[in-house]
Structures are given as structure tokens and as C-alpha cells.
Figure (cartoon, rainbow, N blue to C red):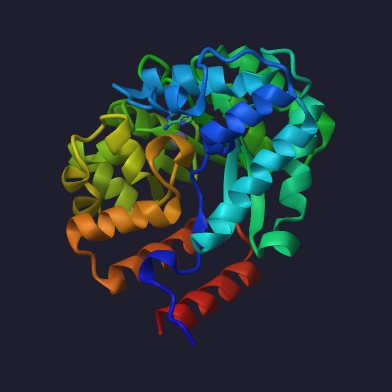
Amino acid sequence: MTSIPPTRLPCAELHLHLEGTLEPETIFALAERNRIDLEYPDVETLSAQYEFSDLQSFLNLYYANMATLRTAVDFAEMTDAYLARAAGAGVRHAEVFLDPQAHLVRGVALEEVMDGVSTALGSSMATHGISSGLIVTMLRDHTAQSAMDVLEAVLALGTPILGIGLDSAEVGHPPSKFVNVFARARAEGLHVVAHAGEEGPPAYVWEALDLLQVERIDHGIRCLEDDGLVERLVAERIPLTVCPLSNVRLRVVDEIGAHPLPAMLARGLNVTVNSDDPAYFGGYLDDNLTAVRDAFDLDPAVLTTLARNSVDASFADDARKAALHAEIARAAG
Ligand code: ADE
Ligand code: ZN
């Protein structure tokens, strides 16, 4: 029996933007199918644009490339391609983000978006051995009313979702802007998460916890600037969905060797590793784990802890969590 490398242990991926899985080749194939003119003549020229100075410089390209997604089939294929690649990385449970507002503003119907993604997620277990759920992310640089409208439309449509999240340009768009939207989601029994402390200050993490009552913080690496916040996150075991390659490519940290992951683990934070937008940032979950393992010479026991944390931090039911923990125990030996 071949052993499973510690960077491909069974695990959950909890911070993954589906639209961030569109590889350059797929963008060109979709553009051709949907007769959309791209700004770039070929894959090489597009790929050469993947040098980012900050979050906004990435978001500009990320939203532009989404223009190639038009039909439910496009959304289903994108989702299925991610699941296939994630299965190869050891992912056995995925809670994926989707930005419906970014498609609605382009005139794509919510039904096309939600039907496509949910069809692929609906067969994720049978096709890829991955249990899955969908988290609808609200664009924080749009109005709170726009977020509320999307939430109401998603609820009316009835497509099953796990919860809502908050993403896009962080600085200048604090969690407090979305208090009513998150209260409405919680009243519907939905899970709630939010990006905070990626480029934004620790104060945004406090707001996400206190005002939005989130169950996980996406990124959160700037929490280390505030000892009181670290104490709170540790005491409440709030999971942080950390994305190392993303942080390097968006210049949140200078290089992988300067990433705060070891410091976060040393402080006792509940850290998970995720891939964020793998088509843009140089790799999927296994690539992220390999990068931090190599940069910090991480022991296999630490990689096992990260895998266990990911399962515990997920919204999977208890039976699924127990099955995943048993898989990890078998694989870790
Ligand atoms: N949307 C897609 N990727 C994102 C990120 N890393 N931060 C905020 N919003 C995003
Ligand atoms: Zn993200």
C-alpha cells in the first residue's frame, strides 16, 4: 500500500472562491464558447497579468475574467473541475464560496448561477468522494442593500446553501456595514463567516465577531497585531481559514518564509490551511501545504493537526466529521 503524503491527508477546504478556480485555459475556452471578446490575445498573455500588487489589483482581473461565465453549464463545469482537482489534493469536504452579485451585475440570472453550482455540488460525493456545501459571499464594496437583495433572492429561489460570507475589497468596508444582512441570515438558521484581517485591521475581526457573530474568520492573519484579539480567538477556538500562497501573491506578506502561520500555531490559534483562489495564486490546497511545510520544515504531526482542525472547523454534521477523523487517523498512521 502506498502511503499518503502528509500534504495530501484527507481534509476539509473551507476557504475557496469558485470563481478563483478558473484557470487561464478555461477562461479562453469559455470565451470562445460564449463568444466573448477577451482583452488578451492568448493564454500566455493573460497568464502574464497574474502579478499582483495588492488585493484590489487581483480583484480587477478576477472580476474581468468572470465575464466568460454565462450559463448554468459553465458554472457546473467550473465547480466540477475544482472538485476533481481538490480530490487529488486530499480534500474530502469542501465549503465553497460563490459571488452571485458579480454575475447579477453582468445580467446573468441568479437561477443560472445557483442551478449550475448546486448541480455539481449535488453530485460531489458520488463523483469525487467530497461532501460539500455552498456559502454565498456578499461583496463588501457593494451596498448593504444589494447584499440583502441577493440574500432574499437566494432564499426565495430555495437552492440549499450552508451560509453566507463577506469578501471583496476589505479596507473601507467594515463588517459593521452588513449587520442587518448577517442578522437576517442567522435568523434563517444559516451559518455565517467573513473575510477579516486580510488587508484590513484587527478592528474588523472584532467587528466580524461582535457584530456579525461569525463562526469562522477568513484569513484573519492581522489578528497577531492585537494581543487581546488573539486571546479571544484562542479562548473561543474561532477557526481562521488561512491561505498562505494568497497572502504572498497579494503582498500581504513579503515571502512564504515570512508568513505568520508558525506564529499563529505557536499562539494556540485554531488555524486551517486553504487555497482561496488557486488558479490565480499558484496552487491548490496540496500546493499551499507543501509551500508551508517546506518553508517552515513542518513536522508531519503539524500537518495532521491542520487536517484535524479543518474537519473540526467545518459545518459538516457529526457523523461526517467522525468519518473524516477516522480517515485522517488511518492516513496519518
Ligand atoms: N474574493 C476572492 N478572493 C478574495 C480574497 N482573497 N479576499 C477578498 N475577496 C476575495
Ligand atoms: Zn478569500
